[in-house]
Length: 279
Image (cartoon, rainbow, N blue to C red; front, side, top):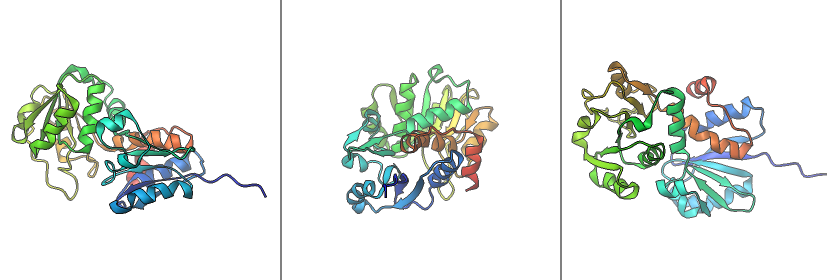
């Protein structure tokens, strides 16, 4: 009897992980393109991470998405780390190579930009400063991506100043750190405004930065996608701004990993959004 090829397995690791929309997304793409494969949520406690990551390829896994709290720790385990993952200091996509090496990448920044390009075709990143609210891992990916596409200045505000200062030292002179209480004053001539904090997310504190000085020509986006239209986006839209919700970033950051694991570049379209929202 000849050996049958193994059905490729992929998944998302985190702790906790039951809330993740990624299984619904990848499951939809597998069905849409008629591919053999499975995508599984895996809850891994931090202390078990090094051992279990090395075990998964032997079980037939070809790669993983990585979410909180493992995105930084995984860089210490991976054999190969891309330049952008190293710059951001976190990885969200792993590829288990045939030679046994673990390849770590970060597609959050490219997913962020692809979401804006798809949903705000007129966006001109070089046309003015960007305001980034928050200084966590998502902010690092966003700042790296904004610099790459030519934003001339990034005004960064975070509730705790030292985290913002650390980003300034990592990303250089285009990043200008401001106190959180001054955040509303940064908006006046900003061309791009990004909320990377969890403020406004279902179950989290409200987003309370006043938007009265917001430039009505700005593109405003929120990485939060539960709810899909946050209070931040509702207020920005009422001021005339173009707004982009955060779900598209989740969809676009997932596409490169899916292609590497299952061999097809999936399309991010309205049907994909619908499938994830209905899950």
